[in-house]
Length: 430
Image 1 (cartoon, rainbow, N blue to C red):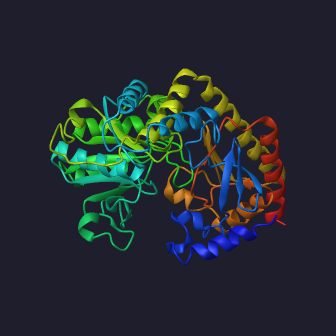
Image 2: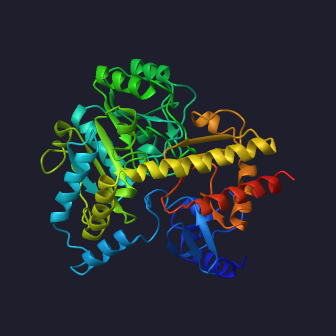
Image 3: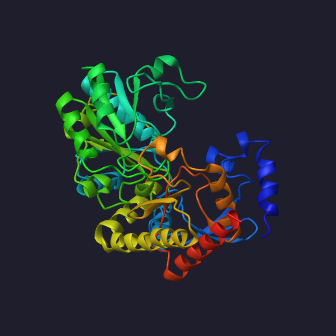
């Protein structure tokens, strides 16, 4: 497999872009080697600058539910572009997509469009603080809510310890208002609430985290969070940037039957275009400027091209709910196939999957929070990643990322993925 052009481009990029990439994980440092540069994509495939073809399982890290370069999305974007690419002014499509989101997502009564998931989560925390008049908020260890200062906080020494900055440039003053708890532990939440009585504005989490690999909520966990937040007047925020419209038309909250106070969204509502959104109860969202005093703005928010792509995607998902049946079946075949191959080969690695998301952890222990995920053999994962890449399968270049499947994966491609997995497992253990 020739990758000389990608090597040349990566070397050249490092002269102009920090680390040669515009998002750190793309540098392949967690898996070794150098990144491949993508030229185009179609259906289940991506093609690099050397015209090598890969079956890929990240789908732009989530939004490409119906595959890359789908006619439905492409035609919507082309049609919208004929009228211009950006106005910085209201458009009818913004209302249409807002109405559609509200009709699909249980918690959302009003919604504000933004340009990224990070923007959505930052804004949601600000609104929750403005609504409650409180400063502190709780986040879960290993959950990623974008690169806003308040979210780049490492765990302290115990459940009631305030966080420490996890990146230079994040001040201790910012960190002191961020409280951390392990995912799937209601006891830790109760302890934090008791130690910070009446001071906590919000609790934000990925209901189904995909940024420490994929983990699933234990039975009763999300329901318990809902009860605690209701009792304590804490705004419960579900970060569904990954799971919204992917696990079901109404996201994880519909799937599990737990309704948060606010929800952050992204990726899929842009159909692959840069986009984000946050929404929730009417009484909370009425605090957002210009209706209320909490300021948030964006010149490109509601961009007409992104809205056109998002409308095409959401209308399709809303009208064709059989998409989810198909996605679930594809995911079952892939994840169970991987588990069966591992069992035959004598490797008891954990495989978590839900809907069209799955993750293979190189640990024989169950993975249900960040600490258990960190027991994975990351060096072995790096070898596995390279072995799969060599066989034309493109995975997320990190052990701690979920994979995302699309309806473009036909049975013959699933067979190729599983055969590549079998050969790769044999190779990395030889």
